[in-house]
Image (cartoon, rainbow, N blue to C red; front, side, top):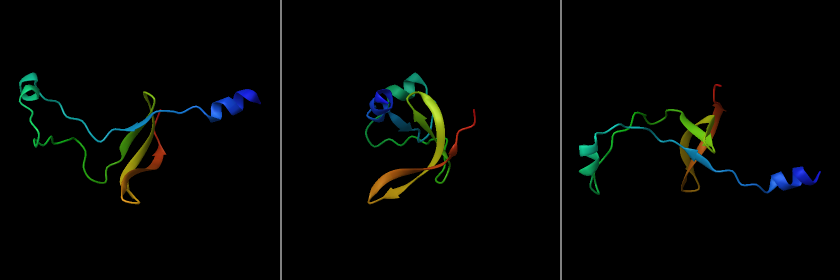
Length: 78
């Protein structure tokens, strides 16, 4: 019972990947504030949700009380 209680207080890092892009080192060196990076995702696409370094869910971005939020849409395929 003590182990279960201990696990309840563990905090897990969760991150959502908005998209990806590949650029050359030269392009990287020329990045400046205001530059725009075009990602490989579109508005409304499901985004990967990672728990630690493991892909666990897919979700969609939205707003909740004027903050960005992610709604889990499904469990990621194994």
